Each structure stands twice: as C-alpha cells, then as structure tokens.
Length: 310
Image 1 (cartoon, one colour):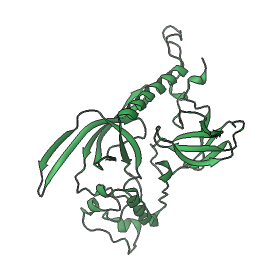
Image 2 (tube, rainbow, N blue to C red; image 1 turned 60 degrees about the vertical axis):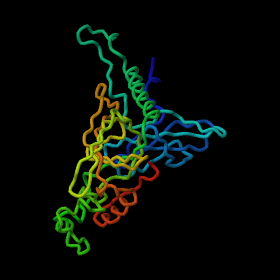
Image 3 (tube, one colour; image 1 turned 30 degrees about the vertical axis):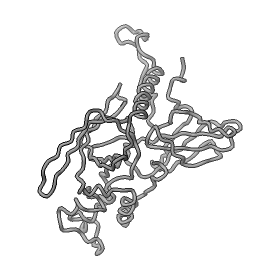
Image 4 (tube, one colour; image 1 turned 90 degrees about the vertical axis):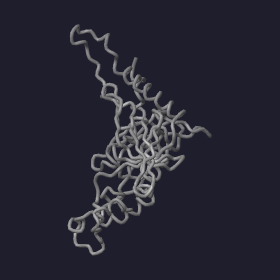
C-alpha cells in the first residue's frame, strides 16, 4: 500500500511565493498531447471557478485580499478532444494532509500492527468529508457568506478617526456615537467595507427553526433562530453574516464550533439569529463593499478582486 490513498496532493503541487503571501505557484506534470490547461479556484470544495488558462505546466495565482483563515482550493484540467479531463478530481490545497498523521509503534509493545498507517488515515478523512459533502449537495440550501473584517482602515464614522488618519477636511467625522450602526461604509464594524464580498455556500438546517414574535417600541420583531451545519471550509466566525438565497433573510452568526478527528476539522456547527429588517446589513452587497473600499483606499491599499472566485 502506497501513497495512492493520499488526497492527491502529489499530483497538483502548491507552493506559496515567499516574498508575497498573496501569490501561490501551482504546478503539475506535463500531460502528453495537452496544449492548454485550465486552472480553477474556489473557497468552497464543491465549486469550480475558472481562473485562467495556460500553456505551461505551472501557473502563478494572484490571490485576492482575503482573511487568512480562508482555505483556497485549486483544480487543473486539460482538453482531450472535446472532453475536459481533470488531472485530479479532489481539489489541491495548502491545507496538507501528510503532516497530520504519524506512523508510530505502540509505545508499550513496540508493535506497529495496531496502528492505522498514515495513508489509510488520510483516506478515512477524505471519506468522512466526502459524506458530509454528499449530504449537503442533496439537502443543503444556498446561502451567501459575508465574512466580517476585523482589521483595516478605520471608518470615518468612528469617533477619533479624523485624529487617527490625519487632518483631512473631507473625512466629515460623524459625531453621533450611534452613527456607525447606520453607516453604509462599514455596516457598524468601524472598518471601511465592513465585510468581505460574498461566498456562495450550502447550509443544512440541523433542527426545527424557532420563530418568536415580540413587541418593540414601534413595531413587531421576529426572532428567528436555528442550529445548522456546513462543511469544514470556508471557515465561519461569530459576527459573520449569512444570507438565505431563497428569501434574502439575513442572519448573524452568534455561535460556531466544529467537529474534529485527530485535530482535523470535519464540519462546522452554527447558531444563527435573524437580523431585524431595519438593520443596516440588509443593504450589504458586493457593490456597496466595493464603493466603501474605494472610499477607504485613500488611506491604504484595498485590494479587491473576488469576482472570479464566487
């Protein structure tokens, strides 16, 4: 038994460019008769988005500016007549598998036969994740994930921004301390853009959602909460926003955890709570994020290029 049980990491190789962490070199063995290769990328294992085409057996991908906890997946294909053939079906990722397991002898007996070999561990891991994907493909709903920004240029609505960014008369700092909750440049985060552009994912309802209507000062508010789960990537954090594609309902991630096997994430469990219809995040869109980043780019490089990844 050899490395054919691994997750195909030896077929398409990934290598980060040392002087620029936003670039990755993708390489593979030349396929006889193939004159052109297609390179695909995604933040989700179930999506293949065409990034570019090349005649070489390598490609340098310039990643968009994204959170460091996002995992990038890559595929490479070539044409065989009129048929597109993928060099590997499973995506390649820098989140490697080989270093996650070690073949060791039993420390008590010195025997190794009771230990599951490394290559089989990798195979079992792939099987568990594949079954999660199969369930979501059948029963999951389409959602859009907006990952919250935790670092960046402070928005002009934040008190003290004018002092922090210099004496720019065009900043027009908002003196209303509640203004950030209505700001379309940061959506209450205090950072230009507020969120990263959307990523399409699938989510499975885990339990029966609860709907509670309560009285507010001027209207009725619907509290809609439910437990759910999704794949191990992309990584979801508290305060991220999820949009239900079928209804445009918007939810705040209030709690998140993940199941693990030998420190390897298998899937994520989420607790979601609906946002009131008056919440500024109902205006959240890629176009508005782009406009906010353009406004904030006066104070630094916004680097925005996610369209082909979605």
